[in-house]
Length: 274
Image: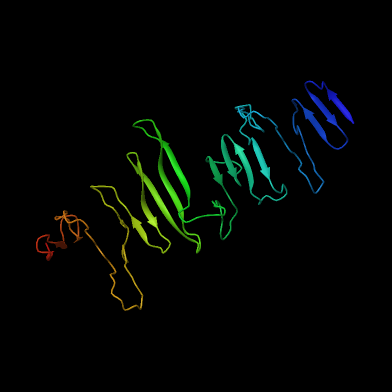
């Protein structure tokens, strides 16, 4: 057994197996300040424990500081197997985190070797989950108008029915200060879109380079004999008497076909222009 230091301040004890340090420890060396080579199959190579009754401390349990602006090397590097270059490693460098990327180019940079399926990110809700639970990715930003931090957009994955594992995906955006669900892909593959633009286009399909084929195709191969609509256009407000249900236009100057519903006679009006 060996003891070094003043028991009231810095104190280090070696009992032949464990090294215990009470107080603080500062090391200065050129390379390899501390190397721990564990051969035991149980236990941890390094365990850092803080036992403070006060919750007011802002100091981390472990702090890694790169204290020279001229050094661009990673502050922290963690690898599962040092002899296998293909095993993803964790790098912390210049305020960025790289997983499998030794020089992360973004706040979070994930890189993996070629594979048929790469699972780069997994968000999981543990049991017990209930219907309506959502796992979300949120995007926040500073508003130029009022300098307030607000949620600008969101992607939500909803647990629709926990008993049969059904889920839907929703995309949210903010207009002024209200975050609204705009686009939804439900558990059956149906798409529902809500547009808040009063003058623009709710759903715009642009294929300027299309030379063959179609911009949009509505196709059904169901053998069911029941009545159904392949395309259903609804103007669901009786006050919108000038709204046109369908306009087919050859170019920007001509309307080839216009279908309207007359609010007084409920008659179908087909107007064609040259």
